[in-house]
Image (cartoon, rainbow, N blue to C red):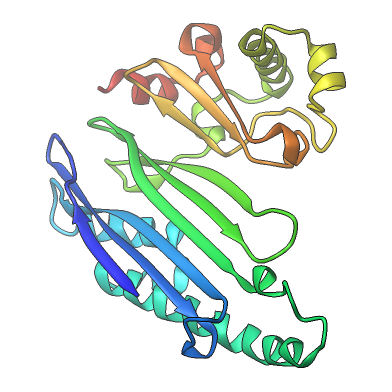
Length: 266
């Protein structure tokens, strides 16, 4: 089963975007009574930009971070279709032999749940200005086991140079310790708690240190610098993912001139 649509996009200045979405289910052995995998993709892509070739360059990047580099040389519609075919093919090739063996066992009852997979990929333009574009990709997958996995990744792009923006581009050197302290303070304020309580009760810091991460984005409109920590990065799965937004007023002394330019160029 395959459904698809093109969602209404949005316009920011001369940059216009749209999205392609699919929802496809594939059964093992093409048998509707057998387990299946479900793939949902919603890919945001550029339809028009200010300079010739700019939309194509952006789409190459968007497809790369959302679907993978093996698809980034294709037009968006073709990339999504090929990705869907590959996902379905891999599912059947990987699981059909094992599932057939399990069906021969006397105690095969209940194994279907372990073969019912899904993958959801959703991308969108988080925010954009004359200079800055933030692209967000949300990923969720289940491949058997106790629970699935999910993640959210942000990508900052300079629309003048069409190049990715790294954390070292927007922050001054040797500020990690101070920024980590600010992140702990904001996290405590968000939870109306203390750092000790965050560590003892919620497990923050148990799976990794709370330090600045490349998974961040700038927001000129809300005047915030946001860091995203996915499950297991700084806390156990039960705690979930964590987003920490620092007001620019708290970190402006840590921003480079370039960082200030990105935030001021609305």
